[in-house]
Length: 103
Image 1: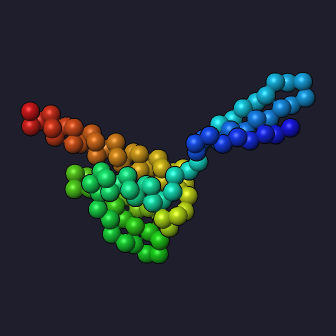
Image 2: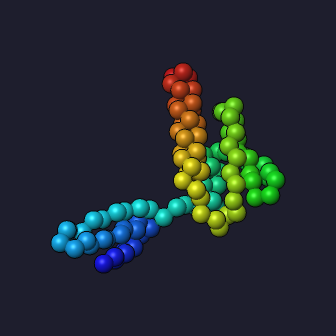
Image 3: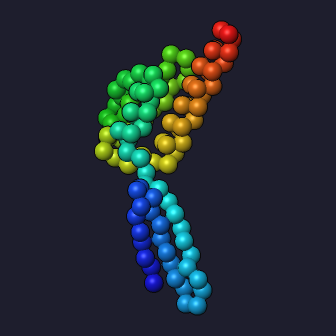
């Protein structure tokens, strides 16, 4: 028997196998592309349209750029979420180091 439950964007899957107790697997709903873009804007990134649904993002404190593909209402792929989290950490680290040097 398989049951599913939803609790504030966290989904779980309960699988009951014969005499074995339930196996529970949890996963979160993917973010939307618009959520990733909002996170980048809030962190001070600038964007430039690319081809099709692509946008190129950069931050004045970094020399690297990030390209996001997909429309605003599309689910973000796991690799896109990881890329955004990684580049946000990089910006945070650079700004923290600059602040330490100024003090």
